[in-house]
Image 1 (cartoon, rainbow, N blue to C red):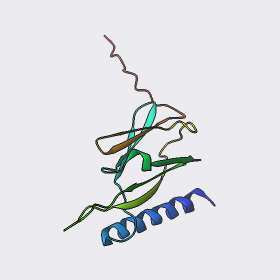
Image 2 (cartoon, helix red, strand yellow):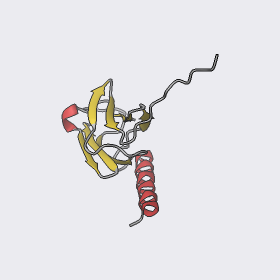
Image 3 (cartoon, rainbow, N blue to C red):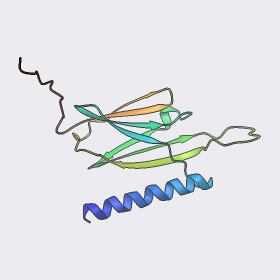
Image 4 (cartoon, one colour):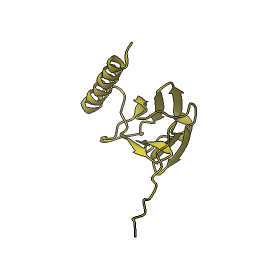
Length: 129
């Protein structure tokens, strides 16, 4: 398949997950951001209440999949926080070195750093005197 078709398919799958999470059925979808760190890319994923042992990270080609599970509370009288399993697949916004992902979990945020294949380094330019 060509890349535009794959990108559209990924977009449709993401939209489906978002609609299901709004309806309160199906898997929940943690919010995510890509950040540029000059020599690396960072994926930030909000996963409060998810135990580190339930998290899975799979890097394949130009995508990374993150999956996990947030347990359901006991004796709930009212609930607004989603629980259960999630699985999200992201396409790297820039090429990265294969199998370079390094994950940390702190404060309910999973941060996965990937080494860029072609790093961008900001070099300050000195003005002429």
